[in-house]
Amino acid sequence: MNIENAQVQMRKGILEFCILHIISRGEVYASDMLDELTSARIMVVEGTLYPLLTRLKNAGFLDYKWVESSSGPPRKYYVLTRDGEVFLEAMQSTWSELSDSVTTIIGKTQKNKGDQ
Image (cartoon, one colour):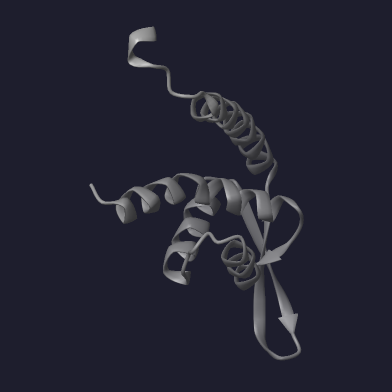
């Protein structure tokens, strides 16, 4: 396994959580999600984002509304449904537990082999 593949797998695992978290703050346009993810150094492209948004909508976690735009076609803004809020709360709890566990593990110094 190479490092690039491992990094991609780690990012994929948290992308859905990050997207739901961004949407939880209020109505958001897909390109704004891409901008925020990119500025946080979570590299994602439209070809990844849109299918994920569709899956989340089909699961009942998201809804969207069309808003007229003065500079072009109407824009689709995403919002969390109540089920999406509940799902995000569960993901937040899992993230907190995992984060604490990983911090505990990586924060320990290596013991001498004779101490084991």
